[in-house]
Image (cartoon, each protein chain N blue to C red):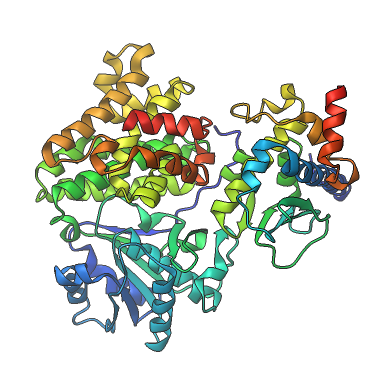
Length: 394
Length: 178
């Protein structure tokens, strides 16, 4: 592994734990900011999550009055451009994103336009082409434990006009700080907890097995897998358990840092395509596809997938399993986690449970082939292979 | 071993040669060969692609026009729809001479990509297939995860002659003799 060239970059300061939000005013002041634009969505405002953040500013020198709540379910270029306009009109000097992947991606898009001094996000599409520019300080506060977007260098933003999913990859998209506070995830329903947890597990497994895995990203991935192994099912059973909540929030962040530096593979390529073509929620698609893609990959990468058993199931199970069947046991462990989630909260285990039609599978395979994640997979997968996996998972 | 300027010039020369060959083969295969044609048929007419072996070139410029991909030379062009640029000549020469796969080059952040990444994947897939066709299999298999869809080596090599503009009819007649 070490004789291969790799890059690793994770400058994000992590504020994790009880009342972590209360430290945001101090963080802003230390980076010389006093007027942040707060990005979120209407739902988070309605259920009081935004208020928790705003309360953290009371009595501080921070003027937290510019709030943009119009972020839709899927981040769009139009939303980003509107947010940029609002940022400039209100003379803000920093950005705080509080929400899921869509809100954080919107903030990343806004950061791109601000740093480049432009008007339209469409001009900056690509991988690693952005100059640093005048970057607006950016704090990300995830309200789910799955995407890991608060520590990744990627943003995906839809251009409705051209019906195009625009992808941006740049180290300059990384926030200055990520804040994990248990108050933000404690009220998540079990179904969302399970779905986002499977997403985080997939990030960790793919980060560990993809072709750009390196010693640092693998250390992060192993740590994330251990946290998910111990905490996902207890958290789905008892969402009020703050200790489990924080463990999962950290697992999601750590897995995010892992895959930001080693990228993801086949499961994500197919999951993105299922989301784009059939509207399958990302975490649900990850949970369904993960064991089937592991089966496909482990035929060619048996040793690598055997190692996963140690991290997914623990030391005892690893040593008790004969060497030749450890890769299969790792897949069984993932599958049993998925089935446990299914019986606890109805997380789907088959594609047929999600409303996907068999007639859509060809289009899903076409879309998956154009996903950059496919290049990172340790095993080549062509259109026929992808259709075969989809049929297995149906 | 230090990378002396003379060595870099040699590497640039090698890259310029390989890019030229790639461009001509690409052009030829997009007209006649089904895996490349299937891929490039989906590209919009008028789309322009630029590949740079390092920030100061050499370059490979391609354009889709009249239903085929045309090799438009080795000069820099402004405002390409997709611009793939290797970060250094060391990375460029390794990827272009088959010492490193295009997948590994992408995974190892060896190049930047300006434009639609999803379209970039289609271009990368084509380059992968053409590399497999141009290099002998014993050499190509070190960098290729699995044999890509088979393309005609004859067409890949004959594309090197005449700016990749050999007529389909001519190719067929030569192949039938072979």
